[in-house]
Length: 200
Image (cartoon, rainbow, N blue to C red):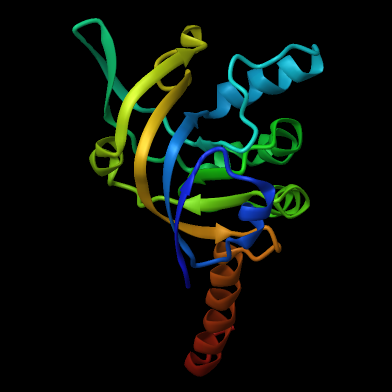
């Protein structure tokens, strides 16, 4: 396990260096995107429209932040991760289309996303659920917000962050998936325990 201090945009070469269980602290630009932002971004692609933010090499955070206006400026009060499986239907195509280097969320993602990460040199990093205030402390400023018509949680928020983390690499660009490995181990243990208990 290695700890990395990375600044966006992150190159594909650096993305491929990250391995499952490595720790990452990110500085630079992090952009939030949940279900509706993913859906709209892919609609833009089909219509040959450019996104309002170039995501290549950046970090995309599955997050619906709590934000408020202070003296005319947006401030992130809390920024906890959204369960990433909600984005599984979109993420593989999203990575192919927009080339983000890091996807941040909680709960892991599936094979389609993992396959796309392997192909394009991206990784999935897990952020601890329930630590929304800790996450917000690393957000230095809200650079801009796009697609506010989707609602505050679903809008695309562009954050400038400093040492955002700790993030744990849970899916790497080699196809390793920490969540899948744990699920397989749990299933093997379940079968062994049932056998010992005489349960079928």
